Image (tube, rainbow over the protein chains, first blue to last red):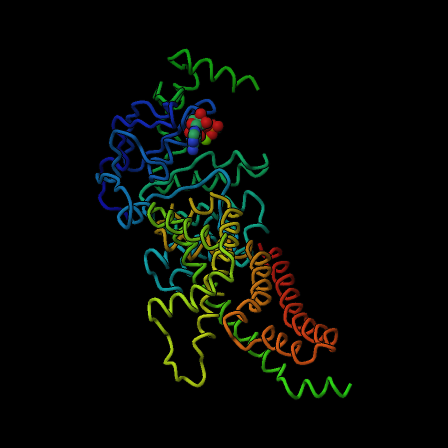
Length: 250
Length: 227
Ligand SMILES: Nc1ncnc2c1ncn2[C@@H]1O[C@H](COP(=O)(O)OP(=O)(O)OP(=O)(O)O)[C@@H](O)[C@H]1O
Ligand SMILES: [Mg+2]
């Protein structure tokens, strides 16, 4: 399933990115080891989504290096597509393929990218749907599912490619409150199975229960890195203290 | 009444409409194929392709069909000495083929615009999700974007097909024996029957285009439900 046993899965070195004049990522250095769960937190507009999106090159970078399992991200073409297949991504708005059934959403990647025979892809797809608890919805279209179910399907779709690392960009923030936990439960079960994950989320419960490390971003920079417990109880920087005081007052 | 049946035995209106149908079907097929190729080029990340496709679409879109028909029928043949059929071919005439080519080229720009408007209705997240699971550009387009874009394009494509059917009359000017040409000849010989002639020909076109319109409306409603 994975290339080698130890060592960093994701390495970002001196990564810079601009949107016009806006310095969205400012000298980002981040190493994520195999099996590690990194939670990214920060105010709106601080660059969390952009950070995630550069890791599978949905956004290009202006300088610096990003390596996945030791290999520098290719620029374009076949090599990039192959690498993206090994990096699972879960979006805030699910982005399930609207014209395909739930099961087809899962099997598309394996059959087209990995050339897995359809029958085998379906079998494995059903296992994954079973695992995220939506196997009984396999033949429905995404629009017929609740948000929580859609997001669990999206996780299964990413898992179908046997990724080395999973990126989650605010996977629960578009959900009704009663559906947040069903998605977090699936994510926690992935953590227990040793999946390497980068998770942008403000769900403190998840960060404390499942996170190995919290990375706090502000204005495109990583301002503070700490264990979840230390970060939430004793933030070191003024910006983190300010941010936490705002989200904790509710 | 006698004069009308006399006229209808002089002129084969049915076979003229059959020619219209053939022009429509082949022209539509050509326009769909060309238009899809142009659209794929238009949205491709390769700047040269997308610029060329935009140029083609705009030039063709703003050129009258008559000019395009003349260009292919006389220009291409006379100047460049290109004929796609042996001049002696009994089944397919040079003007029929050039008529089809002109119709296909002209309407390919409308097809491309319809498809592009359909692509614009597909949320950006769909393409990102496709790329994120490792599909390359062609696969993303084929498996995810175009099938959804096509649904959004059915209604404008339907209008394009109806326009194409009616525009087949333009190739009368390059000598294809389709309905408009026969109508012109009938009016010359039976000027007193101008009203019945008009009613007959107009009815013929309504019989061709009305079902087209109904089918496309039904189809686009159905696709909207499936979304
Ligand atoms: N495609 C783009 N073009 C221009 N500016 C952009 C683009 N995408 C993001 N930005 C800007 O870059 C900055 C960082 O955006 P990003 O989405 O990474 O922030 P974020 O931390 O994920 O915020 P949020 O919590 O609101 O999701 C923001 O100021 C945003 O407006
Ligand atoms: Mg974001």
